[in-house]
Length: 373
Ligand code: HEC
Image (cartoon, rainbow, N blue to C red):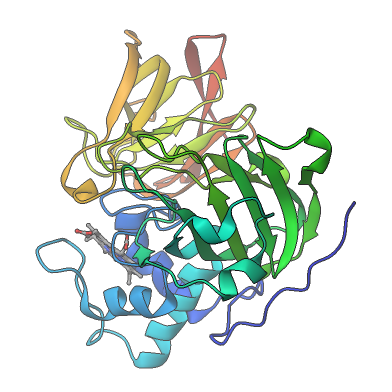
């Protein structure tokens, strides 16, 4: 069954229009050097993943933009830009958010729920024993939580299309969007009683609730994702990222990806071009040379809390020996921009003789090629 959900109106205006705003313009002039042109992070953290060290609410984001974060490279911009620009910056960041945000985890005593289907109604008559706003938008549980979980979040959708949840069947789980049940699974009940609908979402914000219970055990292992169009998926994990395995960054099949990450022994402005054949080329946008390259490679972003910005990320892979440095053979280069086109990364420079673009493309299973445009 497919049906359309009407997006909730937000109190803060979301800049979802295609018109570039003042905030977007400032982002591209100021913030991109640390947070990356696609907000994927670099010296500063990614602003589009599930981890917000300082809060994911519009208020928390504005607070960081205004006052910065003491002891880090992130300065406050309150005295730099007028208030309207700061609000526009906040709205620009929010318009790039996708997935669950502002996650509140509430725990309830089990008794009230035993033998009953998990519905929102049941929660109206029971007091929560603990409520926590989670900075990371992942559901994490204490050890030996002897409770029923209710996770309340806002779901930000940017791309319209068909979405569905993929939830590992452990214990029982109900998921509601704007109060309507879209998923129910219970590992004790016959499968016919379970539902898992696909649904169409428009860009906007939705109320997402997850009700979950499982056997008392070492820790909850709730695990699921929200899967959307173009292969996007948003984790709703059951464990905190802290002390956990690092986040892996790889190119998607057929699509190159360019990121800036802090990698030991590489200059901070190196462009890391991840090609779909799992080759990573570290490209120096200052002089147009290849710094280093690896095959069978991936980037491990350091776990976020509490010190993701203080530790470099790591590239794991096999170094490729023959890299060709200084391909442009030009001394007077000015880096203009980079972008991806299909399986290739394109880096454009202004040179004495006009604009030149270097295309970095996959070659075979373990190599890459460079060409000019
Ligand atoms: C000189 C580098 C640099 C620049 C420029 C910069 N930032 Fe940051 N930013 C950082 C670092 C580093 C952090 C992480 C600080 C920490 O958590 O210790 C950060 C954190 C943030 C956070 C909080 C992220 C979270 O996980 O909660 C937001 C929001 C943010 N920056 C927005 C901006 C905006 C908007 C601009 C442009 C006006 C900007 N930044 C410019 C380095 C920078």
